[in-house]
Image (cartoon, rainbow, N blue to C red; front, side, top):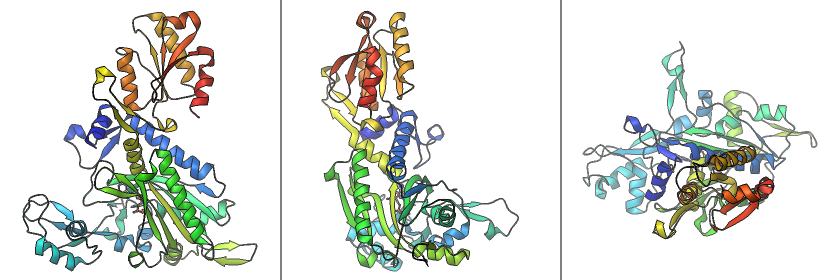
Length: 455
Ligand code: GAP
């Protein structure tokens, strides 16, 4: 992780947030290559789950929606973590995490029992003293104040803790305005905010993160088990497309007794992260009709589906595949990161072996020598041609070996070098990131060559 984090900063993938002000815990900025990678992953997801399917439509709702949405969903009351503070060093912890790490017990919701176990034998991991405050419930939603003259309590709104809420409340609008028929899904990508007590592990747990979520509506009498399995397979397939190896993925089914009362089944897709082993990457939940029922009741607007063929009206059930974008990015970076040899002079290199379609830059174009105007001019012409079709970078800095190493570190699949031979025979050298092999390709066939390699 340390090497990856250093590379991300050095090469402009991800910077620690607000660094010139001394940093701001758990916030990160996606730099020039990070934002390209991020956009490529979103595009891959949108293409796979929206454009390539005729049963899913997209939407983009607001971050701040009516506060009553979060009352109806249960978040205002129940979206809590158990917080405890060390009175000696004032560090805050998730009480349930401390208890689980020390005893293996999952005491979800049992605040008093957590406090008893902490006092009985769990020391502060930071200062090793044992002097705990009471365990308190801590709502993870960020609040904000609206500029209104209403009563104080009325002016509180929330930053959405998940994107799903914005989807449920548009169910009727989407039914009324599109030609969707059950089963169908609504997809959305967007920011979510959670006041995590303990954020950390780079971009794994953030206070501000992005989700890619689908609410998939089905008939209550549908064969949901088969659909559930299909969705799990699609989520695994997407993780593979990001670069995950099959052995680094596993499914974790939530035990029946821990499921929310409305859920028939919830499964996490876990990835083997290099900190503490398998951890949640994506999730899939059967949510029954909990959300549509609650929003119908709270809003007074019936969120039903009318089946014109059978002339029946009912409330659909929901399968919810959810994907954390920042965790997808972390997986992609981790899976791509590879160090080959230790000695740079003997050809040792760090290379980000991104799947080609996710690489931030697809082709780097180099004039062999920076001070030979004929080479630079020809290289510029080729750059101008290719950049209209693929994300390209022009680089004339340092020797070609250094340029290759830099492009390897940002995961560029191809480098094109324009040399003196190019002026004679109109060919260039194309170097492959993974095999490091080089071949001469005719300039007038270059675009076609890349179009076929970068599908
Ligand atoms: N609508 C369902 C939902 O929000 P969740 O398991 O709480 O379910 C979904 O979150 C996904 O969002 C997770 O699988 C994870 O990938 C991502 N996620 C959740 N909390 C996160 C955080 N604090 N930082 C980064 N990603 C997070």
